[in-house]
Length: 147
Image (tube, rainbow, N blue to C red; front, side):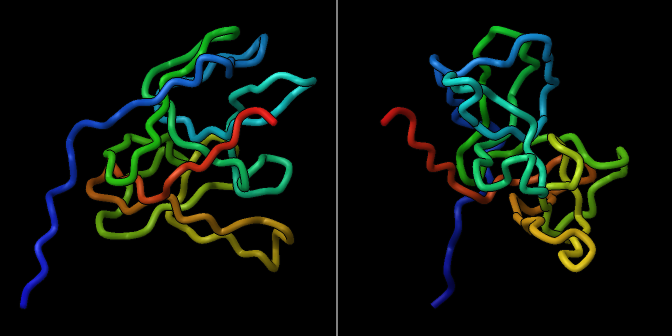
């Protein structure tokens, strides 16, 4: 018996954490991969990358719109949501190929990270390319905020 699957949504269910802000002196564009990290006791959005210093274990989602210092940010976090991510090197995505967090914080790549060259790096697949500019988000954010 064939299995049916609903088509990928063209919209998304955005999420905003009202107690998480963009750090002072920072401004992020739409499509940046972010993590939610505690900085000096406060929760902040930080660009997320594959290296341990860039919090891949706290990857949360992608910014749906630009966000400036001191603001909350609208995030795309839902599995199946279409995202136009910031791609390493600005090169087009190859449809039907996986997308990973990049070594550059906030960006994605379709080249898996060579963990022999980058010890401790995390090969975190975050979705699948559906066009040269879009991907379908395939992870679920599980963020515990508070104690």
